[in-house]
Image (cartoon, rainbow, N blue to C red):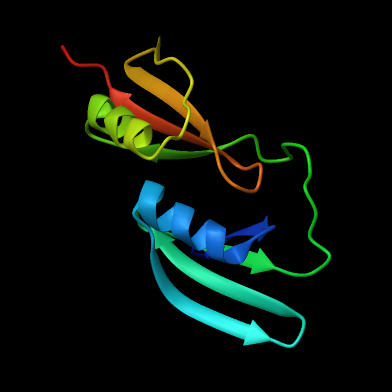
Length: 119
């Protein structure tokens, strides 16, 4: 068995594509337009994320998935990038041997960036 993809309901597909490209360095790999939906598959750090756009999508609270985490090499550089994009992030905190921050996406999804603590 192999992992396929993560599906995320989106409220504004164009805004979501732009966010995923700018913030997560995602690349569109497939874009399907149907009469009542649009499905955009993006490669993000070796994982495929499907953005699901349907007229009935509406804002929802967090969950059941709490967050999606990405391992990065340089947390400082990521924070500088987020600041340049006017994206708020949580104060960095150390958890074990990692330093982490969180951001909220345009569809109420939550992302974590994880970097090893520098010795």
